[in-house]
Length: 349
Image 1 (spheres, one colour):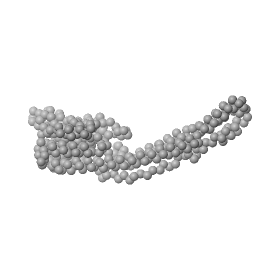
Image 2 (tube, rainbow, N blue to C red):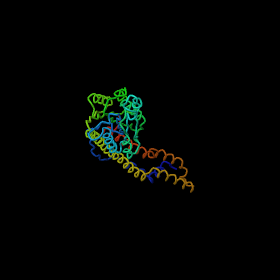
Image 3 (tube, helix red, strand yellow):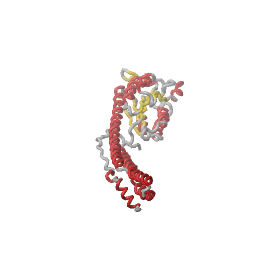
Image 4 (cartoon, rainbow, N blue to C red):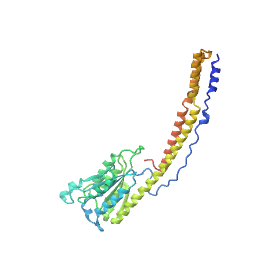
């Protein structure tokens, strides 16, 4: 019995023609995403921490409101309207003790997160209303507390490191013998790199110089706000800039979805084609043929072992074909996505 000829005959009955199933070039159309002028590659904000000075001087007038009441009003509006993809937190410092000598120790130790990043924004109003201006100005202490807070931030769902940004509002200099410039630099260079921005609310030249130095050390920007209206404009500008970056990120991620969907569409096509030309059909057909041959005690039954070995050897590459091609397509999609995100500036440094 010519087992080789028998295998050739059986193979012709169950042809495996995977050439027609080879993957095609992935095809997708990407939207044009224009980064905003404020966009910094690798630094899309994930968390915003607003730190408000609650020293006694914040009880001073800012037009028809006290500086504290103006800061509270604008903080509520700012944090409440930041893009929902950004987690927001509110810190207050110098809010305990008093601005008298006997209250200095307690006041200088006071820096507290009063609205956590995971707290519902609906609670912001109640939290803000409780703030009172009472103490000294522990700017360095506030930045050191911020460093402890951001150190515990988890990575995002995509595995990227968090990108927290601090906005510190103050109407005066450090009065607790700390070194806020060194604290800002340490916060910037900590394990979770954090940008520190400062907002000088109706400050004198000396205070403005210190706040500028803090922002420079923290890799951020100093925003002057001479009165309540200016504070509102600065916070609105910051909020709008953050929103434009989030819109850009959304556009880029929509395009990422297009790339991923293109790969999945092609994998579905080759999977369907593969099953129409499945090597398992030949393998199962040959096995069934020899079961019948052995039942009928026909001469072909003597070739069962040899033919099945030939089939197994012949079909081995075809049995791995779908996994290999699908893996290649997924790998190409991942590489294209990584390259696209990198060019869009959305890969963390």
